[in-house]
Length: 234
Image 1 (cartoon, helix red, strand yellow):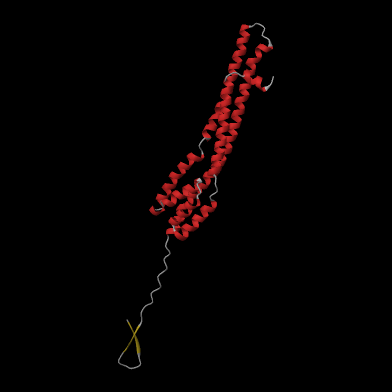
Image 2 (cartoon, rainbow, N blue to C red):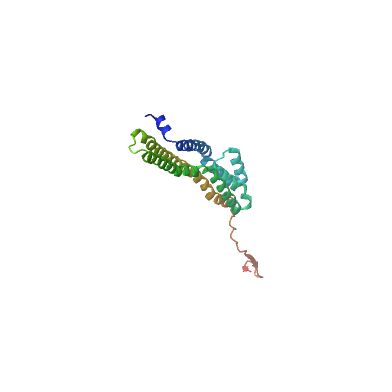
C-alpha cells in the first residue's frame, strides 16, 4: 500500500489536516519574509542619532533618522521619541511606549495562530483516530469474523490521521519558537532605544555653566596728614 492509498483510506478528516498544514506553511513563509524586512539592523543608526542629539539636538537627529529610510521597529521607536522630544522627556517616553505597542502587533503577528495550529493538530488527529476505530467496531458488529481487508480501512484511517496531526503539531511548534526568537531579538533593540533615549535628551538639554570667578576684596589706600605714611582704609 503506497502513500496515495493510505491517503484515500484516511477518510475526509485528512483533507482538513492537509488544509491546516498548508496554512501553517503559508503563515510561516509570510512571517519569515516580514521579520526579514523588519529585522533590518539599526545599531549604526542608533549610534549616529545619539551623536547628533548630543551635538545638534533632537530635531537634527530626527532628520537623520528620517533620511536613513530604516523602517525597523527600533528606528520607528526612535523616530517617535525624537518627534516629541521638544515637549520634554516624559512626552518622548509616552510616544515611545505607544510605538512599542504598535510594533509588537507587527512583529508578533501570526505567532499565536501557529501556536493554535500546534494545539489543534493533535486534536484533529485524535478525532480521526476515534472515527477510524468506530468504523472498525462497526465492521465487528456487522460481521462475526471480519477479514483483515475489512478492518484495514478503519485502522488505516485511525493511524494516518494520528500521524498527520502529530506532524503538523511538531512543525508548527518548531516554526513558532524559531520565529518568536527572531521577533524577540528585533524587539530587544526597540526596547533598548526606549530605555536610552531619555538619557540622551537629558544630556543634550544640559547647559554647562562656568563657575563664577572668586570675588577679590577691594583695597583702598588713604593717606593721612603725615606725608609718606600709607594707611589701609575700609
